[in-house]
Length: 221
Image 1 (cartoon, rainbow, N blue to C red):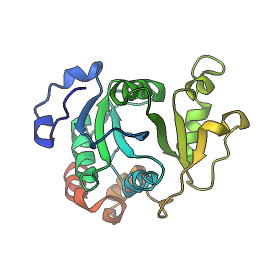
Image 2: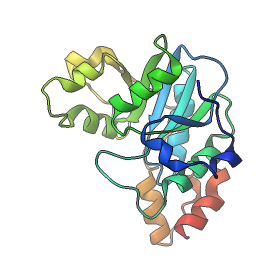
Image 3: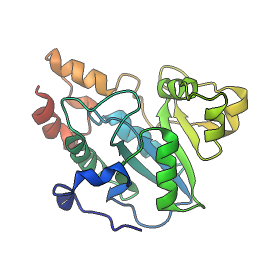
Image 4: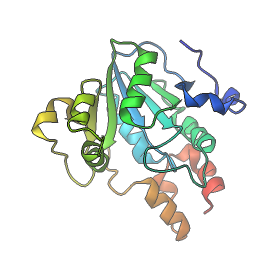
């Protein structure tokens, strides 16, 4: 297993290596039986991201915040991968059961297989997401009929309500389970943060308090 890197050492890291590796910048102690994976663009990290991860700790042993080097449907714009990583590290610093990593792959199946290499064959892998994200993931065109159902043999989804509960297709229900939230985050999103900053509205209540200064520096407001 590769050694984890501290916050300061990550700033001088050779980012070209991310093409092929899952690299940890914060690693929770121990070996989880159940791993929660929160993969997002974190543009910026919000209280909803942190609430999703914190709530999941009632169902999993560890949550790893994952920033893919490349996304299948969009690019990094305005705020770089490095800058988003720094915000996630600050936001996750308060909980010993949170890890932070960057992956080479962007699709869930790619991320799951990178996690499998790091956490071993015994760990159950569960991606965390909201209802809106679950609908996109389940209905994504993977190019082959039944491809997503096949993927669910390698990981599962824990889905939080976002504007209503998610009712998965019957054939997938065994691998898609509800994730009860400890708070109400319906109106909290990265898009809302960015729009509020652009419109001169208050946004500080939408992001974790420790990263308010970082968000202000990177996004204005």
